[in-house]
Length: 156
Ligand SMILES: CC(C)(COP(=O)(O)OP(=O)(O)OC[C@H]1O[C@@H](n2cnc3c(N)ncnc32)[C@H](O)[C@@H]1OP(=O)(O)O)[C@@H](O)C(=O)NCCC(=O)NCCS
Image (cartoon, rainbow, N blue to C red; front, side, top):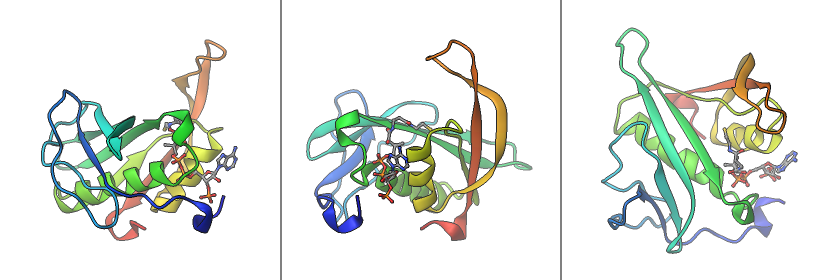
């Protein structure tokens, strides 16, 4: 699907799961709630008042290796509309500008073509294959992962 065929994102924000309302509206779509402050906690991705997925970040706090990581999933009916890319881009922007990170990572399964394409659109670049990295629930075995990273000035 190309960009022109997609429905334009309207009011949307990322907020903390738990029933507390998020804050703010953005003219260009997504906004990170002021309540989004906690690493390793899933945050709802809210789109037009509907929870469509979850997103979370992790932080390496050792000053020698400081960086942040992002994980996301959206409900299947919302795939392929640009929303995942936009949510990742929004959280990445927040991690860079509000949390001061110079480097972000994301680690889709190596065969997750849609996720890799989405993260490339946000500016992430492939670094390399991590062998037998994550549990493959289809087979019960281990699946390779693709490490991708993004430096602050590469955010697209
Ligand atoms: C990964 C995910 C967050 C991406 O969000 P999204 O809103 O679907 O992504 P986008 O629509 O912005 O982009 C997906 C791109 O992949 C493309 N794509 C979709 N399926 C594809 C396939 N099988 N092969 C190749 N490209 C594919 C789409 O066409 C789109 O590219 P385009 O914009 O150039 O047309 C979402 O699909 C998702 O939640 N997937 C299930 C959970 C998951 O895999 N999470 C990632 C864990 S790291």
